[in-house]
Length: 266
Picture 1: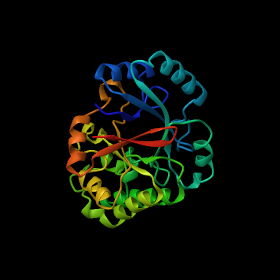
Picture 2: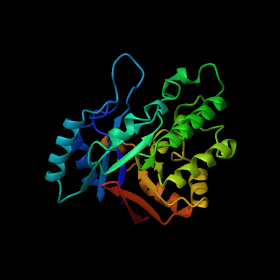
Picture 3: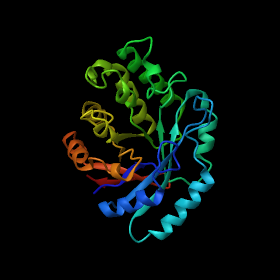
Picture 4: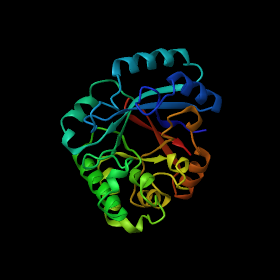
């Protein structure tokens, strides 16, 4: 089994799973390790603050459980940073504020809207909505270098009117290639996020075509995460993902300790 490097617990606003329950499921599955990547979306739109992890409480619970389960599973301390271009000063400071093992950078908010909400798609075509997502993601990647891997780079497709029925790498090739090249130039990894299988897309985020293109361009830093918010989603379809990645030409995937990459055979 593989390390799962994208896991949430009830320290994230969209999860109700106790951290210990996630750990116990990881042990039951025989995972060598999991990394908690709790949501930290500064300036998330809305009247009430959400997706802001209580860092002191999170770290205290994590360290207690890491010690408790030290002989059964490896645990890693991380965050999923919500990227927005205007947070150019805040996010690097946050990234450097603690001894994290691993940081994901993800675009959840585009023009003050989350594609999770139908409002994001109102007033423009699905194609325009997807393209705008990629444009802002690219702007984020050019702005930030303070994280280790880019999360679910086609996140928007999960929630589109037709999801991935009309979506392909070829349809957005120019901007997707630019995104992948920026990641490679900056030494930032690409995530294979298996929640795409959970959402019924039949593919991970990003799709096989994009993963293959990343490999063709020379991309080597590849992380594997379930984006699990409940024990039943931990290491979701990892066997399928592992076979898919090997078919794309990858022989190794990456985990991080103290923000340093380690390569493990697929």
